[in-house]
Length: 407
Image 1 (cartoon, helix red, strand yellow):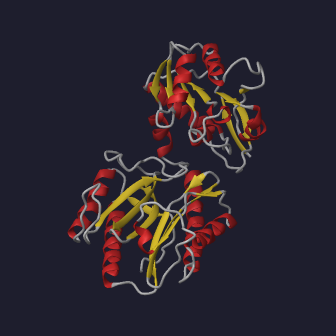
Image 2 (image 1 turned 135 degrees about the vertical axis):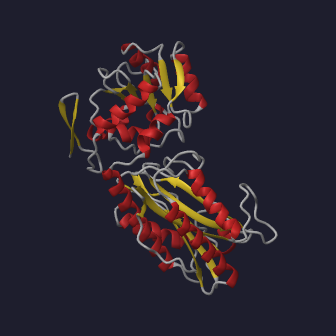
Image 3 (image 1 turned 180 degrees about the horizontal axis):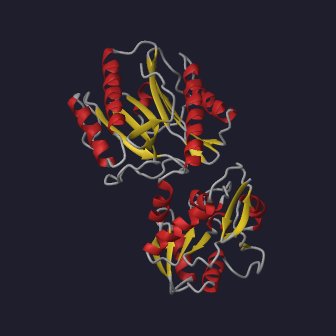
């Protein structure tokens, strides 16, 4: 049971995870950012952002993958401190939302007046009620589909729609101590899954069985779902992204790579290891050694105040010294290998969280949780290693336990 004071009233929240967060402080953080951008309201469609503010973890098909009334109805936030958030939902999701959120103003768009208003017209009515139907209305441009935007424009012809993605990126990028604890547990569960997959990998075993073993172990330890577990062997490791194939079986001396993560109480993880079922070649061993050396130099370099661009440049330069091509976007061919290091955030994601790979000017701050991935891509194989860390004063701490690097 989570309790906090919102405008001097004590509020209790029991979400499906029984986690405890200060939702009042989170809402005020978002409102302060709205103040800075002169934004009157935000229509929150992205379910991790809904969860961050409301405590409600959606289990419906996720917007924008599926555009139906159950997924398009937004959580509406107002800059005005006297205007409570309004959660627009359908009757189908009503009971789940009641047990999962502190927000009291929950309105069913398909109940009254049933069939008379569309969800976007209902949204317009809510904004009119609060006096901001002609104001600056934030939308999440990175996920808002063209069809959703057109519907909102038609319902709110006087509104000025502005980008609100950055607000949640800033609000969520520094993790609360409780969030770090959950992310660490998610990382350790993913680590156990990776080890289970590695123990399953053997000559003649299909990639899909290795992947299944990893995912079953994560579920057994409390993960509610996996985060796109990837398992490849042999030449299939050269695929940038691939699930385990039913038809591809591990062969003698095959490279096997598992990129794995899970969702634990809403929070994600991301780990990668590569090894050989059999005996690695001298060339493969050199590549692995070069990646590990670069990876560890990057980890040692990371600390508050360092930018993502500086970190990734260090990784690129170290790989270049070791003899690898590093031009972004280059395709490995003719025996050349593309090497580098990438950084991305961990959190509600459910995959990558802020900071993002392209945020080169963004400086690390204590409380950020990020994945550090070093790898080399060849036209016939890929070798990658990835750890998860939290930024602390003076450096970073690994969230996963030490795991073998050797091929």
